Length: 248
Image (cartoon, rainbow, N blue to C red; front, side):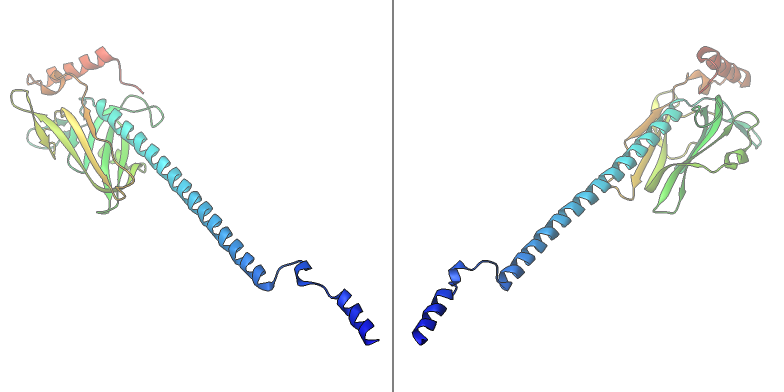
């Protein structure tokens, strides 16, 4: 009886090599490996998303910077020798252009999408703190102009995040030859030969201001006439008649 029972138990015994499944240690190792793989995949996707977002922001900022650069150049190229004020002193001076390192004020036609057509007094100035400034733009109609008209509306911010900036002006020598760049324009009854705007950004590693040197496209006689007020006004009228009334 005992031998029969032993033979039955021997037949029912399951051999280890025929068993199926995983041990607890193998399951734990598989879970750890899968967690590592999922973590690496998520990290890669997150980094790619952040990089794409930064690239999109940089693209937008570069587009805005390029638009501002083109706008400033266009307005400076269209400077008109039209007086917008008279200096109140012993010898009145008809002011057509005023500027220093932080601002310029002049007359030029306006794009139609920013205001009425025709000549308008325009102000480009640097405002804000010492290390985070903005380049902003204001304008008002030339007809009946008063200085406070430039502040009736909020200025248009063209460029933000400016660290250092300055305007410079190209002047002519006594004999009409090109002289040098100056940081302040004192001959307010005349237009400079050219205007240069230098900008450096707080995040200079991301954004760069393209070199901007804008020449004035008007006849020299309109700004250098020494024959009196009548000749000056006639030069302006000839300029308008030749090119047509400035418009958008």
